[in-house]
Image (cartoon, rainbow, N blue to C red):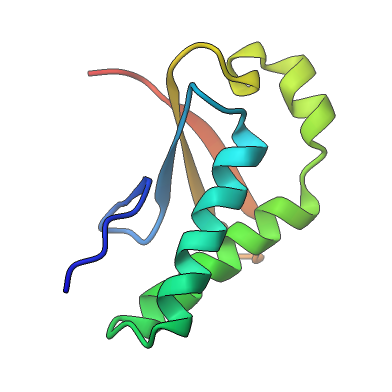
Amino acid sequence: MTRAFSFDVLSDGSLVLTVGECCIQTAAKRAHCEVTAALLEGHTATATLGALADTLERFLSATDFSALRADHPEMAGGSSCQVRLRRREDGSVAWSVVEPR
């Protein structure tokens, strides 16, 4: 069974969240819940899912979302944008807005 997620996973292991109907924090929480549920269901790609869960957890715990939304209004929702999350070598999570093609 293939599980559909509300985010995309790129070949480098980073993930892309869609912000629009909700803010970046809600999108990240939703993605974290989806990944956690897949892990609990015993999904076959547990190493990949574990890495995604860890990335999302670090992003959620280390980010000042009030400041992020204030500095970047597109992160507050209401207009569509995509945000890429990727792990840095030091374990922190970097984010960037993905430019539309």
